[in-house]
Length: 160
Image 1 (cartoon, rainbow, N blue to C red):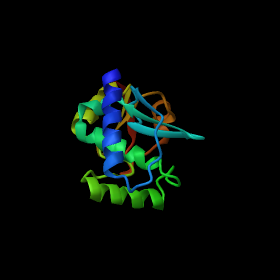
Image 2: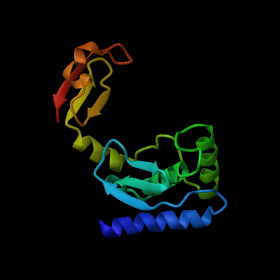
Image 3: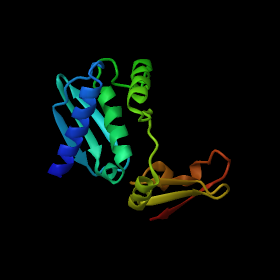
Image 4: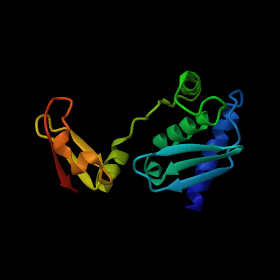
């Protein structure tokens, strides 16, 4: 875990130096967790800034760098959400680094496979076969008969 933290810090420092003209604020803490729903997060509490990264991202170097850059943009004053300012900086960072920084990210097949494996429930549309993965019980899981897919089909739920 310590080597993973060092890897995140190295990537962060590399891009902070390369993009020194962008007003990133200093990050105080880096954390790694086992989240499958949220691959990265930036928490700003007064002057304390923490970037958290899911352990899944260490399976794909490109995704790891994209997510760190995405979270770095959140450290900029006025960029705590994905509003216009955040989008402007995402465009600048994308052009400068070649990494496509998006609001939600595009999960690679390696990470997607891992996420699917950790899902406790698979909700499947009986019409178009769309699959929705859930990691804990939700109304969609417990009361799927109240919901319809975008195609108009009904959902069935199975435990994974």
